[in-house]
Amino acid sequence: MDLSEYKGVFIFAQQVDNQLSNISLELLGKARELADSLEEKKITAVLLGSDVKGLCDELAEYGADQVILVDDPALKDYRTEPYAHALASVIESFKPEIMLVGATAIGRDLGPQTSARVHTGLTADCTQLEIGDFPLQPLPGHEADQKHGLLLMTRPAFGGNTIATIACPDHRPQMATVRPGVMKKLAPVKGAKAEVIVFNPGFQGDARYVDILKIVKEVSTAADIQDAKILISGGRGVGSQENFKMLEDLAEVLHGTVACSRAVVDAGWMPKELQVGQTGKTVRPHVYFAIGISGAIQHVAGMEESDIIIAVNNDSSAPIFDVADYGIVGDLKKIVPLLTQGLKAELAKKTA
Image (cartoon, rainbow, N blue to C red; front, side, top):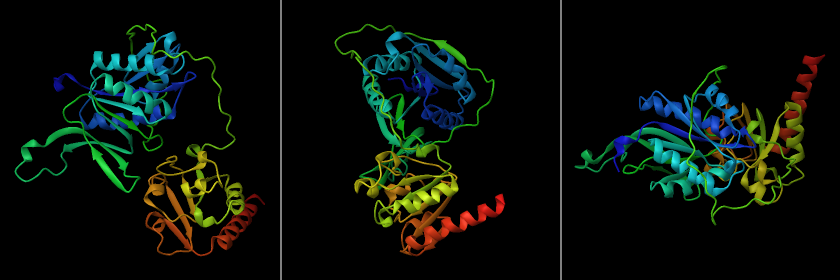
């Protein structure tokens, strides 16, 4: 493999029902940062689907300089075989140095299928990406073996108890799936345009093509905590499902959304859709209340990028206070109702 043939930072622009997923826009933001580090001028979005050309302008507004459009009826709904064939064909034809895919249900299927076809590695569920040297610390006498300008892909390992930094020095593209919510979107530039390259490798159905007989969409009543500006998150320390009523009252006053830790989901108090953390969702609200949450690394990994973190816990040595901007030590059953009442009173004064 001639590594010098591979240039540019590409992202897979996931769309569902002809609407771009947020992760696609987040990946564009990170791609721009990586491209700048590599002194690459253009970043490229790979858009797969049927009748999706109208999404090219949105990708351009969020930073794509170039869009490779594979538009075919075979790609109307996500299926492993045609999508993996399309993305692998794009990689083989355009030879990107870096290929980023969202760690969504679709991306976690598409990423490894594609990397196997193009004979490269894949680092899954990354929470940090940067350009740097690898090995990070070469052994004495082996400094000449260190390679430069590689994609350093960081992800939690061993249940979140350690962080691993992985590189792919000898194969291309360097591929990673990236956890939704951890990268920042660029501010959109209205009216921006991208170069659109129409590409179609051809699709011939075979025994590996799945026939979709029916699509049944799950109806969820749970709020999307990744979109919330204020999150009131509760942990095991809340004590019971009934006690979450206190958090709901506080959320109502602040026009916020209730979330929770994994321990709460495991106890059956709250649905999985509301879980924050390594095995839940990564959130970035303006204000994050961590109530009765100890602050284990698995939970902190999902909320440490919040603008303001306010912790309430009766244990003054709880790890959550290490990441909190403001902390209250005491009985949450007393503190939360008092906080709710105080905020109600202040809001009443402002509206009077």
